[in-house]
Image 1 (cartoon, rainbow, N blue to C red):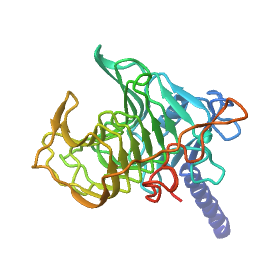
Image 2: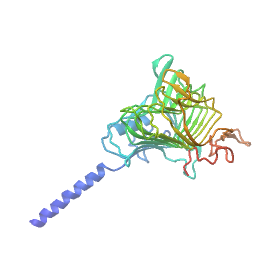
Image 3: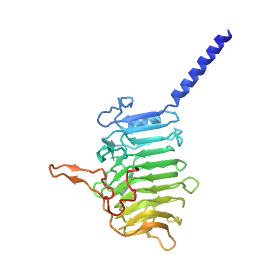
Image 4: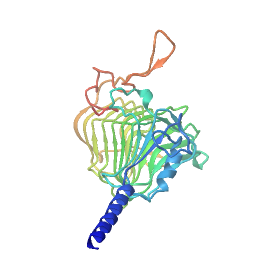
Length: 356
């Protein structure tokens, strides 16, 4: 009788352990614009087709994570705002990740392998200034990497490609992404705008984006742990970086900022002294200014200074562009597309999509 009780106990124990393992296993969702179907389960063999469907799958689950959404090369249109909701409890080592299936450091990667996201979300607000969010991430411990964003072509519409509104949220990493704008086709392009703590933008390329990154506000009045590093910003029509309640622990290094209106914009009440190191800041119209969501208030005065270490302020930054081949009228984007031309100013800084 005692032996039977022991066997029964071990069976129950095994079932409990197995169930716990199943409930905490990693969640991976595959998206393919060409081969996917939103009636599929989202496996590698049977991918879904849209980012909206991926959000529905994630939001309908209460598992703690991790969650990885893998997007295959292709074109993805977002007609309505996609929201990943904060009911999920992720952790630093069990993250929420949206990423390309092939990342830039893969030896076979080319720019054509980047999934391309275009937003056509209808803006909300006045007729003269509408705001449209493409992807809203309302969870902590999130990463977005390896994706190209094109903004929103709707007229008089501010496009936010990646947005986080929760002031109590923590740990958002935007890495190895490319944001490409155009003053005619994509009128107001603000790729990254986030409240909360620990917003990190790294190894990204921003080409003709109005305001590449806004480090917004946080619960309690001060946002800590933020960073912008190893990024290339070319042609920001308003400002390359914007800080609001951002604390002085803000990391800003190994960035190339060129051909922009303002290098740095800040909220009018922000008098903090930030450190800039190992950067190339050249060919911009203004260095520092004050601004709000309503208007740019103009340049800052002598009350604002930066701690600068190894900052190059002169010279022309050359970026690799698309090539038309001689044997056919086809456009080839080299591996280093929109990166610094090898051997020219800034090519040894490590800024751009590649970490290796």
